[in-house]
Each structure stands twice: as structure tokens, then as C-alpha cells.
Amino acid sequence: MSDKLVTLAIRTYERAQMIKAVLEENGIETTIHNLNLEHPEMAVGVRVRIKEKDLPRALAIVEKIEKEWETENEGDKKEKKQILIPIDFSDQVAKSIDFGFYFAAKHKAEVVFLYVYYTPMFTISSNNDVSTYSISDGELLRRIITSANADVENMTNLIKRRIQAGELPKVPFSFELKEGVPEDQILDYCKKHEPTLVVMGTRGKKVSKTNELIGSVTAEVIDSCPVPVFALPIETPYDSPEDIKRVAFLTKFDQKDLIAIDSIISLFCCEKLEMHFIHVAEKNEKWDEIMLSGIKTYFHEHYPQLSTKYEMIDGDLDKVKLLDDYLTKQKIDLLSFNARRRNLFARLFNPGLAYKMVLHTDTPLFVTHV
Image 1 (cartoon, rainbow, N blue to C red):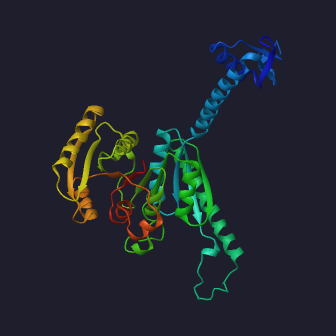
Image 2: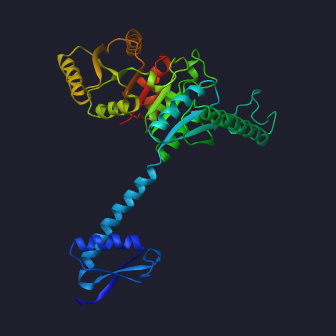
């Protein structure tokens, strides 16, 4: 039994050689059969054979290494990075394109534009008669899709011209058209494809700043998105992330803040990036000041190129107004914080800070959910 050879696995020549190397490192004598001696790499069914006595141990080793290879392959699939830009073909899209393509070039990613259109089932009849429509559902849907495809074609041509003119970096891009509710489709896409970043405007085509009851798709996405979101207000004066020099980070003294801040630095790092650490406290605690000072010291040691400041804000007052006043006074280019994903009930009856800031500030936001 000890000298009898058994087939452990049938693999490609390359994989069989890798298995053979690992087994022999573990003291298991291994041979490979059914080779085309002249061109072994052309063999399809290569047999990895071992002594029967070594079978139990060899099976355990092969199972382990193949699980590791499978994990590596899954990682390779995720290496295809994406920058997601939800669009509604409004004027704000141009700014999102500039920033999205910049990030894509920096991270060697592709840009994916996501356009979500409403179907007739989401349309309310203007004459309050739900049983009749001025045009058929099918005809309305056809018009919506035709219009969307025409907009996609126009935008594709525009982007290609800008790339040829050197106005945008040369990165691959594509379009995804979905039907449904925009925030739901954006979140669903992020959960399935895990883009590196979502870049979007803070107001849609038909949402004015004075009509806050309608809400903001961006605010809904920020509250629940599993990936970082970069939100650009329509009034932003910046043309590129390179224009962002002063970043304010709202800290809760959580270890996860360090991960979020590292994401900011990797995305927006420039030679003279200035970080302002802000903590909102319900009451002035000496310990909070010590923690803020410690954060400043930590980043001075680990990121010596950064200029750091810190500030305490009284949480008993209007946080949004105080934050907005601070951002204006300090000429902050970007506000960032790590937000917790909240359930629907909490978002409806107690809107989070991200939601409020989207609706009440003209400062770009970078929000993570670490």
C-alpha cells in the first residue's frame, strides 16, 4: 500500500506543477503523468499522483492551497476598479465628469455612468383618474428609453471629444441604464459591484434649493451607501480635486476615523494639504481637547507633509449652522466624516448629519461608512 500510486487530482499542467511544488515542500513525493513530453503546457488532463499512504495529508494540503487560489482569483476579479457617476443629464453632470475621470485616472479605474429612469408605473395621472392615461404606458416607456439613449449618445460623443482634446484623461467608460427609483438603483449597484467611489451632484435636475421637501437623492445615497461618496454642490467653484487644499474632518474619536482619514489623504493628497479636525461635543470636556490634540500629534508623526488644526464645536447649538459657519470662516474646501448606515425608520424621523449637510451647505462632502 505504501508504494502504490494514486491520482490525487487532474489539473492543467501549470496548476499541476504548482501543486507538485507545494506537496514536495511538505515532504510528499509527487509525480505528474499524461504529459505531452514535447509540449507539456498543451496537455489538458494532467494527473497529479502520489503514494497512497500520503493521500489523507495531501488532500488536506491541496484543499487548503486551492481555497487560497480561489480567494486570490476573486480578488483579481475585484481588481477591476470602478468610479460610479450617477447622472440625470443636468448641467451638474459636467462637474461630476471632471472629478470622476480624475479619480479614475489616479486609481487606474473605469468610469461607469448610471442613469435611472422612471417607468409609467411610477407616474401619477394629472387628471386624478388612475384608470386612464393620455398616452399608453408602452408608448411612454418607449419615449423615455429613446430619449435616454439619445442623451447617452450625445454625452459619449462629448466625452470622446474632450479626451481627444486632452481635457479629460484617457480612461475607459461605459453607461448603465436602469429603470426604477434612482437612490434604490444606485445603492443596489454599489452593493453588487463595490465601486471605489461614487461621484455625484447634491441636487438633481428638478430639485431646487428652495424645495427641500422633495429631498435629495444624494442624501439618501450617502445615508446608506456601502462605498465612499463624493458629493459636489452645484455651486462649487472647483474644477479638479487638485483645487482642494483645506479639508475638515468631523471626528468622533473612533479608531475607524483613522481609516476614513487615510482614504481622504489617498484621494486628495497634494503637497500642501491642510487638515482641520473638528469634534462636536455636547459639553466642553477636557478629555475631548486632549483627544483632539492626540489626533493632531498622530497625524503630524505619520503624515508630516500635512498641516493640521483642531476645533471644538458646541453640540448643544445648531450643529449644521455652526459647521457651515466654520467651513465658511476657515475657507474649507471639503468636509468629510465617517457616517454610520442607518435604517429607514431612523432616516425618516431623525435625519443624519450627512443628509442635513447635503441640503444646507455649498461645501463638497466626502462621506465614508467604515
